[in-house]
Length: 360
Image (cartoon, rainbow, N blue to C red; front, top):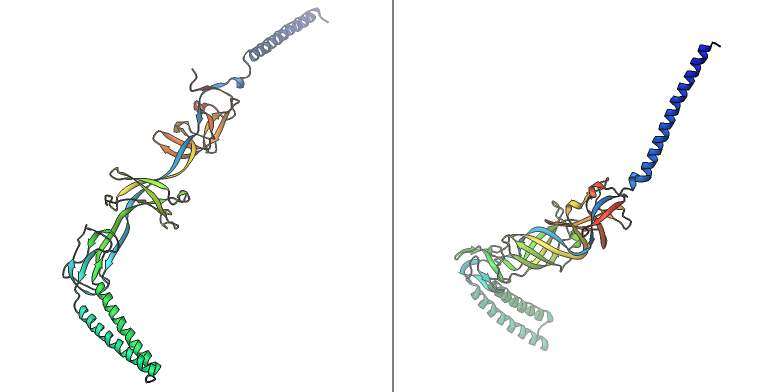
């Protein structure tokens, strides 16, 4: 082989060996550096994120149903004429209070007293006739059918007297219960017939405050439960739940209920707007700021907490009620370590460094 070619080949082999030795050295150095970093710092996932945590204990909460309603009279009745005649006396006017049995108005008796005198005279005659027929029957001079006919005439005469007396009683219109005269429908001199309205009465003691409960809440309403109502003027009254309808309104699908409130001075009028609050059973709940609530990927609403191992957990909650200051939550148990700051930067299953609210 030519000497020059041999020298060139040796130089090429030397250059290749030098290049290869430099790459291996770099790889070894880089690997060593990476090992040093991992040994010094540790895996990235082992670095704990700090979050602010508050330890909350459940508090007793009185559940309430709050709806808008209105006041209504407990009873309303129209006093109607049960006989005919001309109104000759009018004892009350609209707005007056009447007691049970008090006279409202009277119609003229006309010939009713004369008819009563005539009927009483006929009754005396029928009594004499029946007595004579009975005595003759005892002696065998009258048949039993004759005695029965005389007795029937006597009973008819008594019935006529009773009818006249009832008709005379009906000429006086009386209040069926203690109430307020909402409207007087007759005046002196008016002629009334059977069925005509003489006056409309409303009973305001007790007064009813009526509301409508949703399908979700109606089963929780119990007769006898205590409730309060705030009237449109700011007055607060207390009452007892006295009625819950078994049938829903076909248009609104809500159920009527009535809160019975004492109103001895008739100070609460019918038709006033009010807000009704019915107290339900007491339960344990947690009160938090709504900003702490978060959503899971599937849309479930809940909160993030830290368990005993320092791991983040997501707990679904039920919102029991809300106020201007916060919300009441159910489903968190007796005690919970709630993440109050940083909940949006950690995920479920992540280890965190919990800094409690009272820590420096």
